[in-house]
Length: 224
Ligand SMILES: [Zn+2]
Image 1 (cartoon, helix red, strand yellow):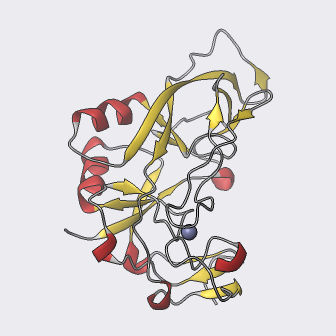
Image 2: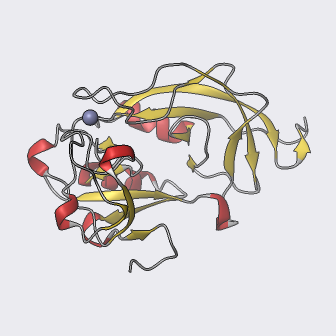
């Protein structure tokens, strides 16, 4: 099966590659990805057309474009075409987005706009083992949390402050190469095959961090 990696995509404060926001008034479906056990949300509400975005800091636009309020990520045509030709699994859907604005200037006809796609990844019932991740809780899980989408995820499941590593329960892996674990919904995990694919394609603005060393803290950089 090989190892697993956290896919880190450069976000707002990197000043290197652009990131996105929905342009204009974004509309959302009333539906969201649900836990098959408790029907609780395991992802944000789906973003509805028109899929218009503004790209901030657009000097360089990577093959992955981070943002909030839209799909999981935006990707380049290179990623999308490469993925479709690969045998990899885990992209649930892709759709074209309209780049309505680049940076703070209103859409300039002189600037060539990149062709970008929104992407949603799969959210299977694959779980992480919080007990082996060196986690610190902001709010500890309460009795009666859902045993499929919890602990973690807010509410009774509790909220995390930091973790030292990411440990997948490999018995629950369903063969996806890109996915969000059901009880670790904010972290995109990729397989070794996906890592090799990204490396071979030389895709920009992404970094595969081995799960064993993928630490994170919501309060500064080093987990305490
Ligand atoms: Zn649940």
